[in-house]
Image (cartoon, rainbow, N blue to C red; front, side, top):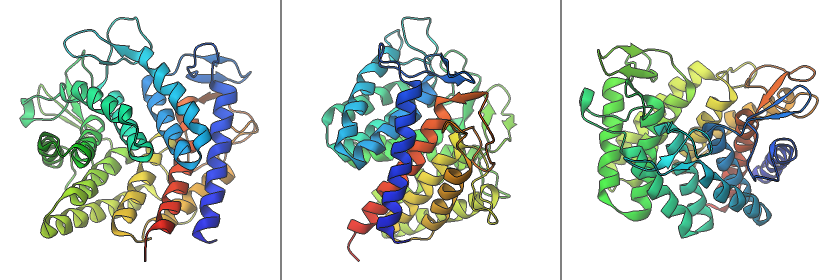
Length: 364
């Protein structure tokens, strides 16, 4: 299959998944999406912000594929403002629509920053850059000097600092620096990445641990694919914004070493599937594709395409809904389908389709 054929096929899979989400999860009265469907197809929720952020990223990818999906993106951009909580000390997005008691997570907010930046990059609409910068103020308000730095996970309970709040924040800082040339973003990205590697990387296999407790420095050693993926994605972005050839080569080497370690842990060479779950592995796919794009080569892209083919063949149930698994075959009708997993599938298909189209436009 040539790149153009692959892009067309992946785009169709993504649009089909996004159309299913629109039909089954969207509430026309509010413009919001349900968090989950039960086996009878009844909607529950509104979506938690984590799932909403993934869905926003899927809509951004769809808008890159075809202008007609910009209206869906614009609608959701506006409706997500219902999650904005103005309560002091720093306004930010809440876990559920407001008004409600404050319950804000730094990682939830940085997913939106990354989606807004991608929307700005593809649509060149300054509103998205403004939203990214505004939301990043809240994210960075979660950073202090305990344990030498790092961003907390949750505003109301500052007990731990997680890779899932720090790695995407480092990436977001480098991307904000790329667009604004504000050195504070580059410097903060450097601080966050250094802190991550000093505190939450397992030196035995290069993968990232989950979090560290502030009270005693105890490390929670669970490893999720997205934590490692966002860390090497940040490394590759650091290389991309560096002016020093030596720095570029160094950080790309670090990113490749970690990417190879991630594939050894979370990619099954027998089936071609990722193995850690849709809501985590779609970010692994994104990071691998970005690494190929930075260097204009196809080292990781074929593995991502093979994983997406496995997902499309085995993932949907008889209503087209995805479970949380990437590497198992869904049978019959799911008892429960969550927005975050549907959006992760749509995002993965569309992101790879856009990647292939971008590679075609890149001069040899």
